[in-house]
Image (cartoon, rainbow, N blue to C red; front, side):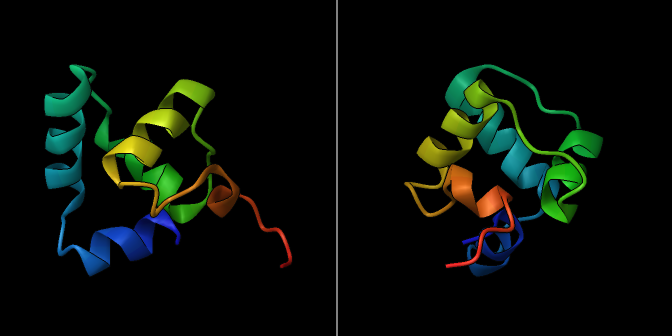
Length: 70
């Protein structure tokens, strides 16, 4: 599941997701960075991928950021 789909399915805004990430990890994600991840302009780094995977309970996986054919 892509990050955009996850946010829509959970009815989360970008700012709410940023708040959840910050509460869970203590790390702040700039809104512009999150927007780039959602749009596919930028791919999260390893530690950011791990955070997204944990926060989304595995619904958003690292492979979801790459255009891989199934």
